[in-house]
Length: 205
Image (cartoon, rainbow, N blue to C red):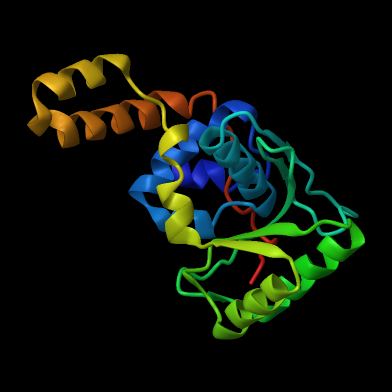
């Protein structure tokens, strides 16, 4: 049974799995459209931790979470409410209703800052216009589509320390070394990394 077949069985993503999942997602970005929504929320939390120094990130997402999947407190002690949306279609567009839900959560929690993270390829024109309107009212909304999320995976990826030295000495080896590191991680890392992709019978369209 291959890795993807194994991953489709469960909905849990353990703490140690984010780096291995990031390797696979960099090789196949559409993997993020198949991952279980709860696992995606935990991955997003790890990505935000890795990309922002001196911050606090908490995975909140659960039934009755009042519209908060991840809470991010930045280095200035400002809180950001993050909503994470896993769309099953690689060509999907994130619609205005997602911004409506985030705006409601911001109002309920008396917060002015929010982030939408989506595996959609783009955000709708109506959603972007809504962001502009909320900005004029004092809110700050940041949008992260699948392409931006993939680019943010770099700090989460495991790094073989010997590769850095070799890349400095022989820059043209970089691609070959990165491929070999990925292969080793996929072969060995998932022996301790259980299932993370969407289980059968539970889809978010």
